Length: 96
Image (tube, rainbow, N blue to C red; front, side, top):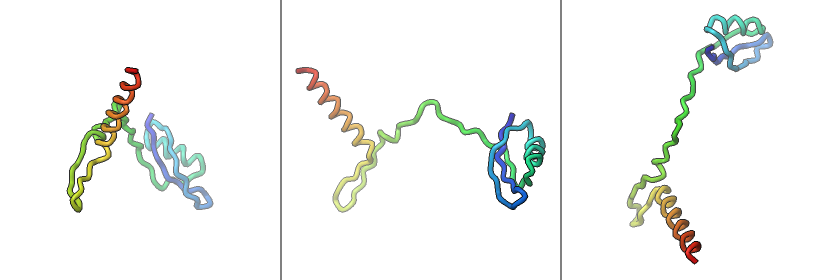
């Protein structure tokens, strides 16, 4: 079955937006009409592609720019430095 996203109006003129499962667009429109609604828009809902492995490369990239004599680094470098400090502190604690 295909998922369709539609807009329709009821007899009072209220706009209704919803999704419907149907074999094809004609079947979807017929079902919506049987609900007493007038279809104004209908389109196949595109499936959302979810990446199975999230990309965290933005955390490791850094940019250096000069602004009034100071150096600005991207937040990702601070995540790396924070992790190094955390691990070294943990190793120091465990070595006692």
